[in-house]
Image (cartoon, rainbow, N blue to C red; front, side):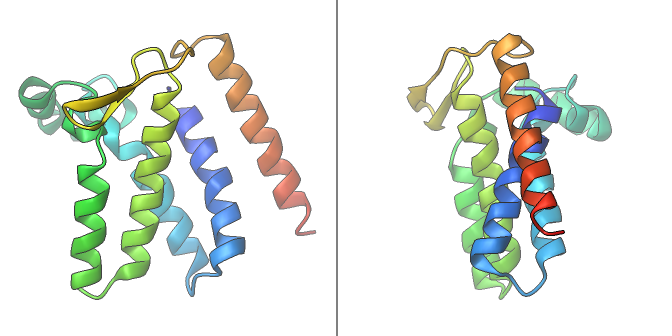
Length: 152
């Protein structure tokens, strides 16, 4: 999926999670969640995140490939464990939720992801940038508007 779709899906799920979990710092939770939802595409030099980190993205793409280990559950699980051990569980959970949201979104695409790289390949029917992704984007954006308007 494209950056904008990952972002609106993450924001929608993040808003729901903030209401449900009621974290101490909801804006920090949302910010970390949305940042983490973009992070798996750091292994693609042409992605929004890949363009920001340039050379690092090229190295990751060359050594790990796109939708390899960076698109697996190892990264969010490791970050969550480390953040809990360091005493920052809120950041860890926000990061893990955001990262997993990205993976779940990419599972809907034709390329899919290996959740337990290199095993357990899951793929869907949506073409990245295609009409169905546009439908998902518009639906998620509409639900965000409904959720936010309910606050007022």
